[in-house]
Each structure stands twice: as structure tokens, then as C-alpha cells.
Image (cartoon, rainbow, N blue to C red):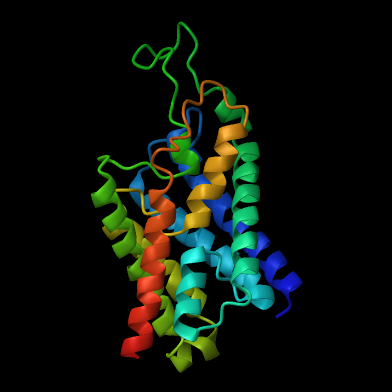
Length: 249
């Protein structure tokens, strides 16, 4: 695969991933959304479907990695680092593009983010969450615990992804991406409670950058003090998964 194909594939695939993922978060959390309050299970499946659509779309061009942690895990296992920077650049650009697209889809809801006087008295004047549409926020802010959560959750993603490559039938049937998508849903349901399961540095950093400059009314902070955890944790988890896979398989 050429550098151009890899870059374009990762931009398009990651943009689709974030469009679905940020989109489902907006659908569940923003006022005047028909899906508001539908819950965590809907969010987990929305992100899983995002992986499904994005990875299948990108696969012919780049293999559909869509995640720096996966890219690093593969590089640690294979020792091939020459194209890693192309993958990472495409993933960050794609994540930012996907976040902008999700914002445009829910533009009216973002503009109605703050209740006007005389409406819903329980929330009148209070801004509804916006950063959570774009990036992860820990339920309990504990840097060490949050970092460990992201490391373990990312290993639970990358190690099976690498192992699926050994399962000949999955590759021949074309169902590998479907299985990975269900894996992402499972991680969200089982391991997503503490931090919101970034498990993908591009997925968190790209949309957080977009949140910082979008003209969202009363959007609040982009929480840069926490932002290193969903980047560093998944990178460590991906590298550890690649190392374990290389030693064990």
C-alpha cells in the first residue's frame, strides 16, 4: 500500500468512526435529540457500528487500522515502523474531520445547548454536556487509576485484534472487522464505566482539539489536564499487547 492510499484510507475510515461515535454521544446527551437519555448500551453499540463502517470502508486502501494503539501494536509485533507516521497522521486528521461532521449533524442541538429562561426549570440556564460528545471524561478523576484502566482496556482490544490475524477462516470470510466491532461493543459494556474507554488516542485527541475551537455556546473547558491519559494509556496498552503477542504466539 502506498503512503497516499494509507493516508486517504485512514482519514476516511477514522472520520466515519468518529462521525458514528460522536454522533451517538450527541444523540444520547444533547437536548432536543430524539435519542436523548437512551443510555450507555446505545453508546456502546453506536461506537461498535462506527468501527464496522469505518474499518470496512478503509480496508481496501489502508487495512482499516483507525487507531494509533492498533498501529503501534502491529509495529511492535512486526518490527515494521516505516509507515507508522502515515497511519497516525491520517488517523488524527480523520478524527478531527469526523468530529466536525458530527457537530454539523447536531448543529441545532448544540445551539440549543443552554436552556432559555422559562423552560425546563430543573435545568434552566445550565449548559448540557458538550465535551463528552467529543472526548472521554473519567467518572472518578484519579490519574493512576484512569491510566491503568485505559492500558488494560486497550490491551483487551489490541491483543485480540492481533490474534484474529492467526484465524485463517476470519480473514477468508471477511468477517474480521465484524468481530472487532463486536469486541469494541464488549469493551464498552464491560470496561468503559471508569473512563469512557478511549482505547484510541486519535479518537480522543482529534475531537478534543475540534471541541476547543468549535463555536459551541457555553461549551466549557476542553479539559486538557486530563487529555494526556487517553493518549498515553492506549499507546502503552497497544505496545504491551504487541509485545505479549510477539512473545506468546
